Image 1 (tube, helix red, strand yellow):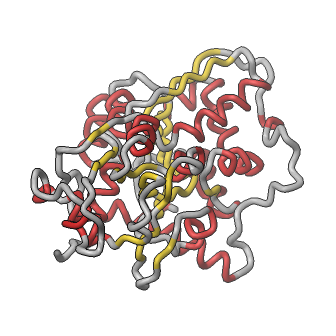
Image 2 (cartoon, one colour):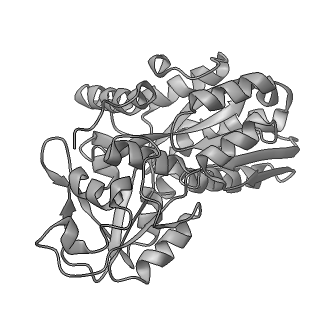
Length: 341
């Protein structure tokens, strides 16, 4: 199968990875060194006396970051109630563009039709890259054959043409055993689903439908754990949290090397094409008029809080790139534009 060129919005991943590589070559591409940072991280930016609600929804992949930030923020700001929901990147944008939330978590950039929905509703937003993730392919612990997979093999499993046809591991590769293939993955509202299908099947949203789908990654974890022939995918944090009960499959990258996901391989770009940036989207009106929203967003972009991102299982952005994210908020750079990174 000949895979199509990636769409412009996915230039974000290449852009950020190129920046990381460039910074690393100059000696400045490592993530923030927080080994000696105090346990309370960036609480110094908390605003005393702030109160009210901060409403967040969206990606289950970004959820651990938002949850960790909200818990730490609430210690210094007990009168602020931060609510973090999980409805997938697409579901989050539906709520965001309907004016129901202040911040929308996303594991992929906003789509053109979602931008149009926000514009129609008069919702102005700021797109903020916040971290790196490695989309992780996992199998059951009993799987001793799928050590390294290619995107072509993943396509054989997940292509729309495979629905009802490819149901066994030896159909993926003759060297694999005569073992029933069980597939588990995010639902169609997930940004992880969009990214995976674009990379593996050559078209965003193109996937076989006969798999166990859930917007809750914990459901996928449970499914793969309980099925000897299972394969699933989700964000790296969920694998790290369940690494004692799951196996992460190495992926053959563009250089033909088999690379396992790790904070190092995600940061240096060698875990391609499954490394990707994560985002949150801030409603400009909420940031300008609700002091609790401003305080929380500023807290998330405090460099010292990169430790919280690392603790959540993701790769914090280098200070130089994080400063660009903060500048987008400070300067109210509206909309989505990969060239503004």
